[in-house]
Amino acid sequence: MNGLGSTGNGGGNRNSIGGGGSKQARIDWYAKKILVTSIKQALERSPSTKSIVMDDGIRVWVDKDGRITRIKPLGGTANAGALEQVLIGLQTAQAPPLGMPSYIDFKIKARKAAR
Image (cartoon, rainbow, N blue to C red; front, side, top):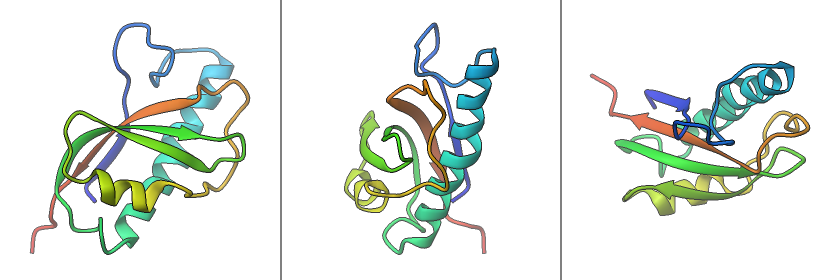
């Protein structure tokens, strides 16, 4: 897995990553450190996703306890089934901060490692 990052949809989308203020800073930190790390580790560990090649957007819903409850590929992806299998039900290391949007968009970039 070469790159997993949180991205916004541009403009004033309330679910984009970025912005200011202490509430937004806590949401950004959770998304970038806790959620991205959890997703990246899960995708790298799973035989069904550790060697896939993709450059896809994904929308991730997280419940109040930090469990991923739903995902939605943004755009066409041949990896939707594998992503759902690995990510739905994934428990993150901690609960999200109060006021976090119900979903966050991410960009997943993965390519096979050079040998």
